Image (cartoon, rainbow, N blue to C red; front, side, top):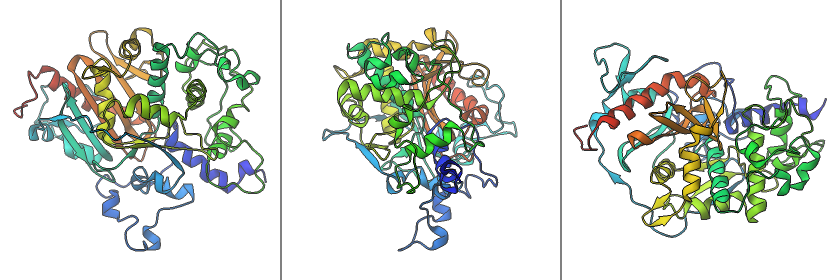
Length: 459
């Protein structure tokens, strides 16, 4: 039997569902938010844990629901990782004016529907307090900043203020931001082909693709992400990126970069259509590392985590070659992700220091004006994509987001001066499926703060 059809690779492919843009989780029996809480289920408790409380290899075990609700806060205990240092300086203080009134805000509990601006029908039976909504929707952490001040903060599941959480494809937006910073600094030229930095790609389907096309995910590279087909590109990618020991019979590529060199086909000319794909971010991470001579983890540390005043180290999942996963491997604290969002809202400045060059801030914050149309699949909430960030809203009130499977979101509403971060371990992977139940809630919160004159407790 081919190694790609073996049970081992079936387990590995399930791991990639967490770390890339998976469409639908394969879970069948779904336990509600409270009953699937990892503390309630007592995963990994006892010395040693009992067999029925153990979370470990194989992948099909620790990625499965409800164990994933513990895994997303404990990846460094299960996989090789590389640290992102916050440095030794004091963290940037966040002001706090937390309101219990926001905790009791009634939000829609059903999928879809419009949310009236700050004038919610509190008598309706299908509305419930925000905290209950977060619990019901498998939320591990949720924070709201208004004008740079924390007005609401929630921790549940496996997460607390001292722990990092998997961000999945939110990582792509951090990688995209770094690229825009380097373009602004003259370290990268987005009009050049990616082979300028990585000539090895000249013999692959990425040949001729510009850095901008990679950034906007408009390359024409063919990549089959059919999860039900064990011969698809996704399964080869999963086996290559797995950092754990491979069977002696394995003959495929090892690591993200070796896998990229196997891609030979295109299904469209470069620059002619948007197609979301993690492989583009892996190429971008390779370009950044070649241009800087550093691991992407170290670039994140020196260009973002240290100068923005992060309070926790972050870390990346890496492959067997020690290359970090640029498209889905970042694990970070809730407040630090909020700091990153606020840094963009503040024009890239921390005090008098310009941490993110102004042109890079403009590229991200005004990206909706030049975003690629994402097509029907994403169009309801996020019809635009540029620089590995998502764009929605309208011309008067543009919205910007970093997004990852299982409900990870960094949500920016510049007009309302609002940053929201939600980290979760939803049993469904696809954000397209999750969005109708959560996007109206984000908008309701932002609308209330948009109309508030201050962040005083009487909100």
